Image 1 (cartoon, rainbow, N blue to C red):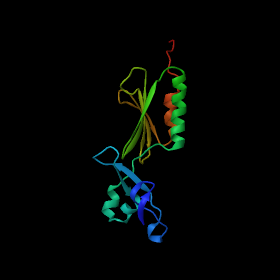
Image 2: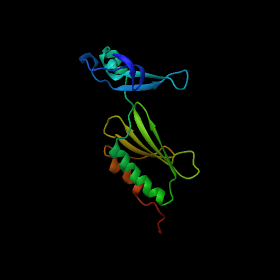
Image 3: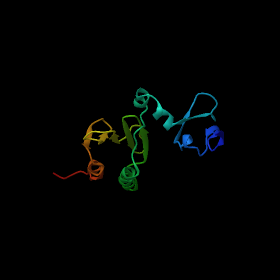
Image 4: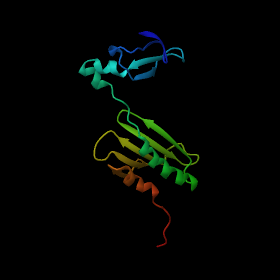
Length: 152
């Protein structure tokens, strides 16, 4: 039942019905850098209702959303306007931050929230919301427009 499994000693393995395959999540614990504590998601689900409500998976962009964002990002990198990006995931929102050259503050942030009508938003460096909406392509439209000087 317990033995040397793919995640180390003490990992549950076997084919009994009680030992149904579990999805294991690794969390770093204080101590030596090579020590990782493994928690089974199914063990958390078997607990009381109170324990289940406390454990919330962080929100992040799915593959299709990330492809859309990176498509817009890559076009602006090729144009020489943007240089770097960063991800941030949290319990309530995920952020894709876009940086210009030699900048410590993101020029734009694309935010995805867990729920609501305005799941996606684009925010500029000053904190102003440029566009909010339920569909990512419409929100990203703000970043694809040409912003040039016009002769008046």
